[in-house]
Image (tube, rainbow, N blue to C red; front, side):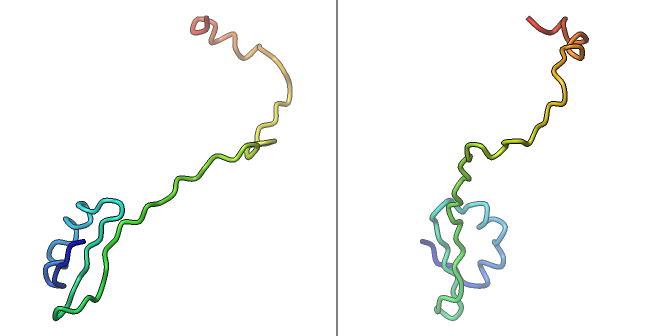
Length: 75
């Protein structure tokens, strides 16, 4: 945890944001009293949900005719 004055934080805000790592905190003070906290929270990654895409694609007909143009690229 790093403590900075309000003036210093205003002057260096873009740099402070770049320096932040997950869980690190910058305490911003004015007249030696804490007035703000700059924190980069850990954002949970969304977990895939089985079946979420069910019925998202509808195949109207089974035909391989459209694959003829790609035969040179297929094994």
